[in-house]
Image 1 (cartoon, helix red, strand yellow):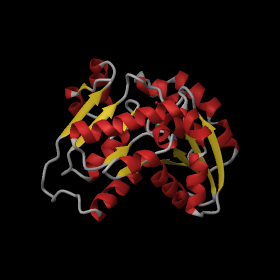
Image 2 (cartoon, helix red, strand yellow):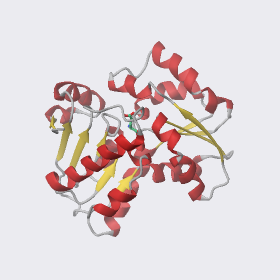
Image 3 (spheres, protein in one colour):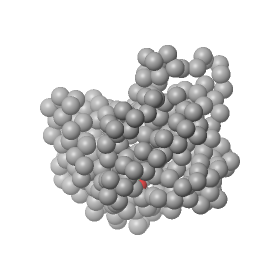
Image 4 (cartoon, protein in one colour):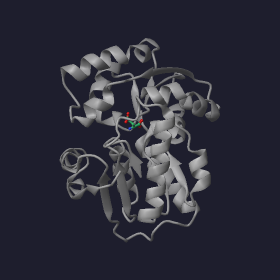
Length: 259
Ligand code: DGL
């Protein structure tokens, strides 16, 4: 699996918990983060390179694109080129969101790249659920997470400003459409209020990955113990340090993924 940085660790956590027998290779592309403010064509190029490396250098049997922006850049050609199944975060997140709402008023927040792509509008339309959708791009959230600053006045002030469109839309379910955002869930939850359920695509994506691997007969027998490797294209020491805080001590052994 890969992400621009630490965000995909939210999906890694869910995947490790659900499929403890599976080996996992996680690449955080911190050397090129953030993805959300970059042209989608550039992000698409990174997604292709990372996916190819997972197949060529690590011999993976499946790829989880643990990044909404990379998914929003379009995965069809990468899926067609590579010999392994590719699971993304957008379809599972959209399904979970429409299942969660009771009022039919839902919101999605994400990076500028994800929101401008229209990927969530399309994915929610594909569910066929008759919901009213409000969107908000949240530039700056990812940078706070990458600095390890997940609570405090600065985050709250930014959240109050950026979340205003989804607060005003009176949604009762809000999808965190960027894998970094679960790390800010406390602040986002406080700003949205107790009547709003936050939906993270992490668990849903792990379920989707498990189902796909099961359908293809690719799951390891229960009882095996999976090995987990973490790599970063940026500064490995800071990746280890913050990764340990966000996911756990395993990230302390992270290695470099050469750009
Ligand atoms: N975590 C990523 C996402 O889900 C990308 C964030 C970024 O690098 O801007 O969109």
